[in-house]
Amino acid sequence: MTTEDALVRAILDSPEEDGPRLAYADYLDETPSPKRRARAEFIRLQVGFSKGAAFDRELLARESAALRKFGSAWLPRWGRREVGPAYTIGYMVFVTRVGGGEMNFSFKRGFVNSCTAQIGEGMGLVPEGVGEFVRDTLAAHPVEKFFIYWAGSMVLSVHVAHGPGGWTGETKRDRCRGLVGPVGTRREFVSALVEAATEAASAVRPPAGFAF
Image 1 (tube, helix red, strand yellow):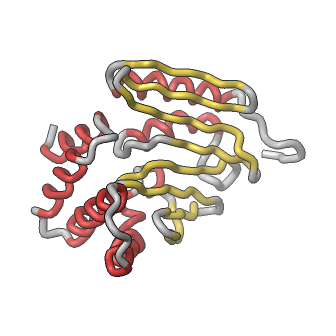
Image 2 (cartoon, helix red, strand yellow; image 1 turned 120 degrees about the vertical axis):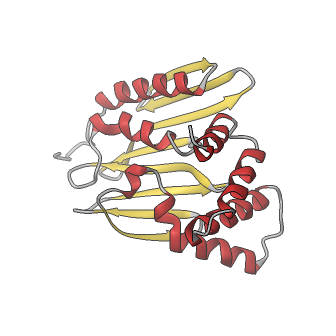
């Protein structure tokens, strides 16, 4: 495991703590890459805002500029493949899929905190791929919420939480709820959550009147 892998793992294992995120920012600052140094500043700015730092206009402008310039490169792998134009609104990055459709990723404290994707032809996601989408995103970001839409209607949501008792998750589809955990290790939890999300997505049906 590389130093960077270990630093990211520490963030994923303790998503509620700021220390691992700031340690990662220090590591990124040691590189000559403008993209990585911008990420370091972005993490520090968002951590500062989350702790009650004043929303200074200049700092907000720097946060927005970094996200606008590099945000699409900081997305999970799924959000970077087969993409067309990307744009930002506030702390969210919207990615347009080749062939149509859109995903959006919201950043909090320097990492993706929630994401929204659409099922459908040309949207880049099918029901059978929801589990992979969840796994891929959680591999690099401490995401708490996934929202899956189909023809404008939310058909599935996945929630993640970490506390003293371990990791817990929940899938919601119509009136059906699936609970995962508590699980002690994140790796085991992600596997269980992906299985639950895959099972829930397999039962998803398109909204009335929609042809897939």
